[in-house]
Length: 213
Image (cartoon, rainbow, N blue to C red; front, side, top):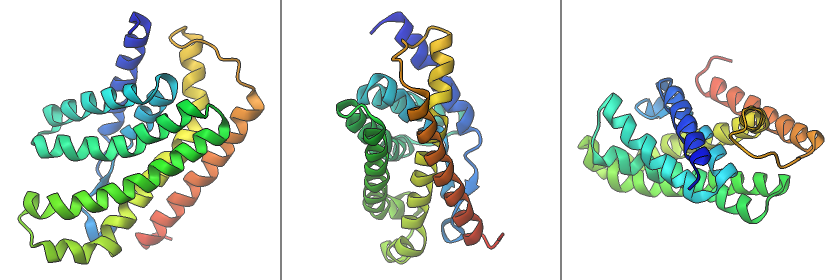
């Protein structure tokens, strides 16, 4: 791994951890202990730039740093990595093999779907142990709480990723951390507009669930 790539990954991890400081917003009232974490946006962008193994590496680094800063256990690290890798590694893998606007969108959609499926399964397994709750109580929360939370979280991250990807990569290119691939501005602008639409839609749904609008 090149020194420039290591430096870029370090910068992205630092940015991801700054965003992680804002991981205190509950999305669904019925599972208020689950809060939105925006660090996956930066991790999937790292995966888009350098590939799925970079997304995996960033996921591990950020998960360990998070429990060092906020506290937690090995279970928190594992659940964090499962959630992040389900989204970021899957999206980056598809984008690596289909390096187009369509590939990015398919990758992020697949990441959203896999996140919902995996976190439903792992919350069913781990949450009763972690919180000392009967498993029947978790089953009762799957449909009204856990599944919608992960769908909204991953959907919001996917939208923001599409919206910000061009801007972040442009900055990294201008500072010579990332090589210029000569992508057209029209293609990037269309991705940003799609991302903005998805982001606004997710925010409106979240506000409606919170009875704010």
